[in-house]
Amino acid sequence: MVSASRVTVVGGGVIGLSVAWFAARAGFSVTVVDHASPHGGSRVAGGMLAPITEAWPGDEDVLALGVESLRLWPRFAADLDVPLSAAGTLAVATAPADAEVLDKLCAYLGAMGRSAARLTRRELRALEPGLGPLVRSGLSVPGDLSVDNRALLTALRKACEAHGVHIGRRSTVDTDVTVIAAGAWSRDLHPALRDVIRPVKGEILRLAARPGALPPPRHTIRAHVSGRPVYLVPRADGLVLGATQYEAGFDPHVTVGGVRDLLRDGEAVWPAIAEYALVEAAAGFRAGSPDNMPVVDWLEPAVIAATGHHRNGLLLAPITAHRVLALLRGDPTPEPATDHHSANDHRQAKEAPVEGSGER
Image 1 (cartoon, rainbow, N blue to C red):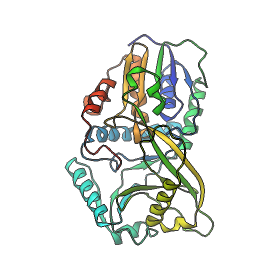
Image 2 (image 1 turned 180 degrees about the vertical axis):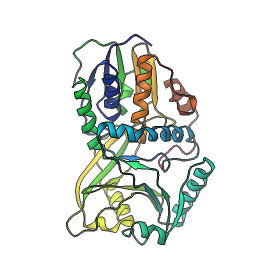
Image 3 (image 1 turned 120 degrees about the vertical axis):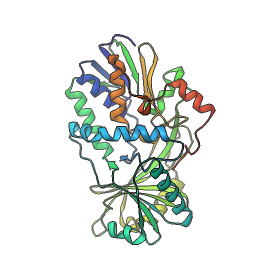
Image 4 (image 1 turned 90 degrees about the vertical axis):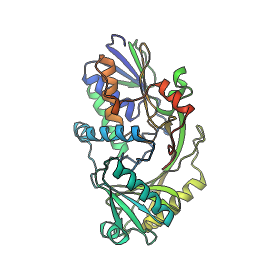
C-alpha cells in the first residue's frame, strides 16, 4: 500500500466507473482512461443481478460474494438514481434433462440455506401467461434484481463527472496509484494478470416489442432449452436475449449460429418474440478467471487490480468499489467469507479447476 491522493483508473466500464466514483467521493483526485470499446462486457450485458440463480456446486465463494454485493445494490442504485427491477427471476426448463438441472440447483440452494420455490407448469403460466408450451417446470427466485446496464453506465459517468473525475482516452497527469479495471483487456496491462484473465466471448440480442405483439415478461426468465442456457431480461420497450459463451479470444464478430440459437431458444421460451423487431446483435468479452472469482487486490506498490468478474461484473460493482476504496485508504479488508482472491490465488486455481465452473 502506498500513500495516494491521485488515482488513475484504467477502464471505463461499470467496475472502473464505480471505483472512480467511490474514490472521488472519498476525496481522491481521479482520472479514468477509457478506450470505449463497443465490445466491453458492461455494454454488452443483460443486467441481471442474480447470485442465487447463478449458483452452482463448487462456486460457493462466488455465491457468497454475490449475495453480499446484492445487499449493497439498493443503496448503490438509489445514490445513482437508477431504477431496479425487483420482479425476481423464473428459472424454467423445457425438457426432462433440463428439469433435472433445476432440481439439482434447487437442492443445492436448499443445502446452502437459500430459497427457491418449485413451480409447476400451471403455476409458471399464472405468473407469466406468455411462456411457451414447451416450458414444463421451474423455480421462482424472488430476491434477484435486474438493472438496465446502459442506463447504469450513463448514470455512473454522470456521477463521476459531478465529482470531478476526468474521463478520457489517455492520462496526461501523474498518478500515485493505478487501478486496472479494463475487463478482459486487463490481462495485457500487468504480467501478474497475463495467465489469470482471459476473454470469454458472449453474444446478445436486443429485441423491441412491435405494436400488437405480446409485451415482454415481467420477470427475468432464465431457461434451459435442451441443455442450452438462455435468458430473457425485460426492458421498457422489449427485452435482452442472451447469451452465448465461447472461448474464442477477442473475436468481435456476431456469428450466424449464435443469433440462430438465441432466437430459436428464446422463441421456445417466449413465442411472442417472433413478432418483435431485432434491433441489435452484439458481441462482448467477459473477463474470465480460472475459478470465476475476481482479482481485487494490490499487484505491486501503486498498482491495484479490479478485474476477472466474468458474468458478474454488474452484480459485483458495489462490493468491488468498496474493496478498492478500502485498499486505497489502507482500511481493513472484508472478512474471508466474502473476500476476493489475489492473482496468486487464481494461478493456483488454474492448476486445479473448480468443478462446474463453466457456463450455466
